[in-house]
Image 1 (cartoon, helix red, strand yellow):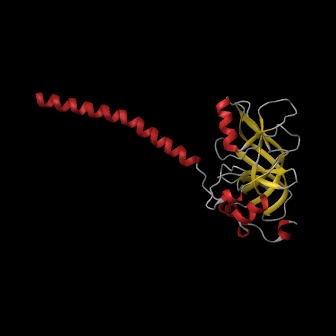
Image 2: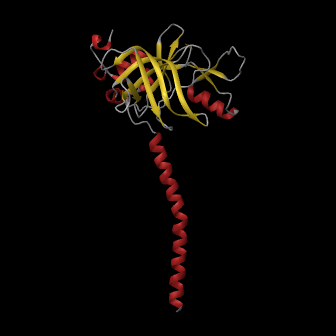
Image 3: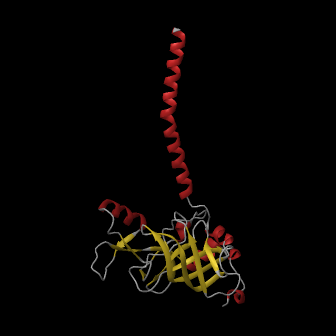
Length: 246
């Protein structure tokens, strides 16, 4: 009987240890999954190759359904400025999205300027949608494009949702930006978090017409022509100017 009691106690103790270890293992697994989900998957050339449309475009309007002030579905319309990869000439795009979470193709940050922002879009055909509707590439549908004071198009840096195999830092330059996409409002952050973001994003304080103190300006980017030639590559874009419509 004594032996049975000892074995039962050992079993209970072992089970208790396993119960303690299980939540830790589950947490580590969950954290690992979250990390892998948030890590960029595709390079610029891969994303362009997988996209049906690659274009420099300017946001015109958007109409989203929201829940708790978060978009959960709707559409955005763009005027195409430069078509880099298209199946046929096109002047306007309707991007349809549904659901929420990372990788969803929504556009809302247009507060500071009446002029709408520009993006380098990576889009795929929407097989279940109406004719002319497209969706964002699942790894990320857009890169913010900003204009310099001497009217250059620049891909804003840092780029959060792409993987780079090349020495991309060597392509990054300092610029003085203007217009939509050039500024960020950090007034919602506590001071230490604001300092972290200023350093991470290479920001400088900016004058604000509304008297707000925590408006900052981006300072770094990659010229759009360099980004297209060096990181996307001409093999992944439409070469026929007539097909592009220009």
